[in-house]
Structures are given as C-alpha cells and as structure tokens.
Length: 199
Image 1: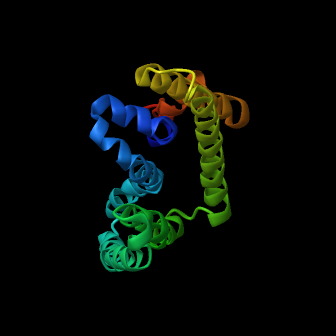
Image 2: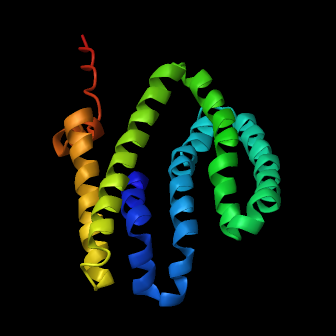
C-alpha cells in the first residue's frame, strides 16, 4: 500500500503540490525524499507490535532507543554537512540515510525471533524496492515527456500516476505472481483440523 503511494507521489510530486497551492511546488524534492523514506517506515511499523505480541517488548524498547539516538544525530549531521546546499531538504535526506540503521536493528530482532532467514526476507524486500523504482522511473519518464506538451497539472498528475501504478501492478503480477485471487487466498484462514470423534 505504501509502495503504491510512493510510485504515485515521487514522480508526480510537483504537479500534486501545484494542485494544492503553487507556493508548495518548491517542496517537491523534500516530498519525494520523504516518500522514499516512508517505504522503510511502513515496513517497520508492523514489527514492534509483533515483538510485543511474542512477549518481547524489551526489544521494541531497544529499537526505540536506537532510533531516538540515531535519527537526531543524523538530522544534525545532515543539517551541518548538507544544509547549506540542500536547505531544509537535508533533514529529509537524513531520514533516507539514517533510518536504515534503526531499521536494521529492528529487522535483526524480528527475524531472529521469527526464525526467518535474513537472505529470504531481504531478497523479498529488494524485489519490492526494484519494482517500486521501475514504476517511479516509468512515471518520471512519462511526466518528463509531458512537461512542455501538457499544460494542465491535473492531467499530468493523473497520467503520471496511472503510468506509475500500472507499471507497479504489472510488475507485481508478472514477476511476483500477486493477483487479486492470490491475495484473497492468502487472507483466508487455514482449514481447521477435524474435531475428534466422541465415543
């Protein structure tokens, strides 16, 4: 779901902001960067409740402590090193650079307790990033072609969003085999074992 949001917002950000108010168009770069950081944030949002649910709230606290130290440090570093060049967007870049450190700690905790191989999980995550990047590139390419040809920002935003989302969904169907039928089947509860006969 967040990846779908991402493939629309990143390429269409200038037109979407123009539809809101022309004064926000300058924030398109920061919006794009924060949208990219949102992908990891979305994945990480489900892990703390999982750790709490398996009786390990101390691991959630450890992750929160790492994030509480890591992120402000990266905000300061980015502001000092990149602030003069990127302005307020340097803080957005701090999310992209610094948050993967906190995420790696969280991921290590979760995979260890789920007994899930790191390679398998990271491979699936990298494929998601690949399809997301492909969709963003397709949308950005179409938007670049329309930049001078189409005057209405609404039309540019809609065509860009349709191209990006269409590319993303096609990649999920063709490369991952994710279809409405497969999603529906995955959401069904597993069959129950038959009740033992009472004699």
